[in-house]
Amino acid sequence: MATSDHSSKQYDQELESMRSRILQMGGLVESQLKAALDAFERADAELADSVVQADRRVNDLEIDLDRAVNNIIARRQPTAVDLRMIMGVAKTITDLERIGDESTKIARAAKWLRDKETSFRLNRIPDIRASGDIAAQMLRKSLDAFARLDPSAAAEIIDADQGVDERFRAILRQLVTFMMEDPRSITSALDTVWAAKAIERVGDHAKNIAEHVIYVAQGADVRHATPEEVRRMVASG
Image (cartoon, rainbow, N blue to C red; front, side, top):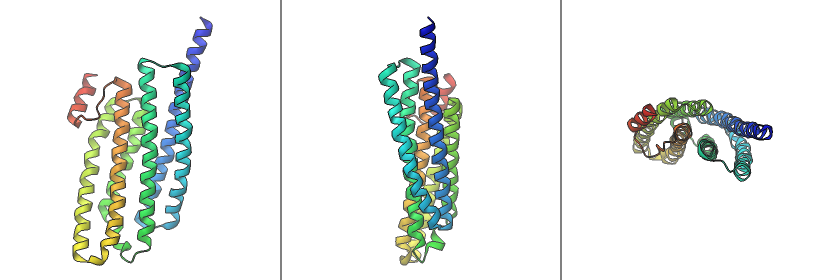
């Protein structure tokens, strides 16, 4: 019995360690996203370079965590709630790595705009920063929901994704206006679309993490549910 209890305690520690490392990766990605948004807003090429370099660390963490997941599955053969946790962790790893990739895209767009004459005008479209801030808030809240395994908080994040999508459409309308007024702005406008789309994708991945939280906590698959349906499922527990 003592050996069984020891093994169970060690298993719980392994799961908790894996969750802690996910949050470490999430903190790095969150910092990377904020730096990318700042680089884009200020057309700061040096800061943009630091974002691109940080992505290597994110990729290293992804590989390390993937190994940890595979190792625990092979050794522990988890079932039920533990299996849901490990599947949720595996999917969250992928979404965090992709948020790192999207942050890198924003940073590269900042560098491209830095070299264009119209960058001062285009990279300061207010909706770009507003959209980025919403996406960053979604990421932060999704990580907090993951840390607490809070399905109610996760449901609120899923609802917030609509705001990012609406901002993206507003940015496209503004850029079309720029291009119609001055065809010379087309290449810069396309670079800005690249950044805006990356921000929209960050929101999507943060939403995915929130969906993983609900799956781990309640076993409900809400990937294709509307925000209203998600709220009802979470409330019914």
